[in-house]
Length: 331
Image (cartoon, rainbow, N blue to C red; front, top):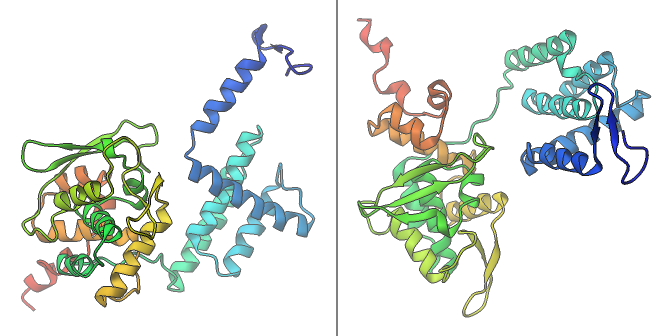
């Protein structure tokens, strides 16, 4: 390590010099290796662990494996879901690796405790809640009763584009105006520059086809929003819309939490139940309606950017009764 600010560090393993600028550069790229949202989640999870550990008299870092196991058990007893507990463990492990310590998540005993928590939750009927899938008719209802004006045009474009392309909230909020390009089929090429499963930004270009109805056509919805908000230059595609005449269009991109508000407001206006409704409902609806319409699994997986067909099938809510094996047994 450097002896002081601006002093070079000696790497005793190789005999070379590591300059302060090298250390800064390495740190910068290590930070970039994780998405900002992931880093925030890890920080929050590690702070929660530190608070619990200090109350119990444990050292948070490096942590004793038995202490971490006790923490996971305490979380489960307090009603935390297995998914939340696993995420907390990931945050603890990340902090340990960053500090150069062995991660408690690698200890066999810790993994066994987590496995037991999952089995107990399943046995008790505590299963992960899934977003509710909507059919195409319900999607139409969500956008047909939106209020007139620029905000309504934006909300229509968000809902229809998310549904038509199976986008996550982070995907749709991450779009820029320049990510839309006319195609030769009356549709749009939509570039997803990075996503939850593409943190290195390899990117994917998706085909957004025009709809058969003017009111629910995602291509027309996007074009109407861009024109009404006067988004002729570069910058985020979806932004806040202020009040006034004319309404003030924000400069920064919408937060993912805003997509939830957009969807719930639309549902309330259309009389659609809110139970189980979330932005992820639009992604599940894409898979469900795609299966129902006979879209091939290959095309669904490509558009939805699912690496595993097994994972994608878990999003489908339509196929169970399409042709059940139990109906063919002659009973």
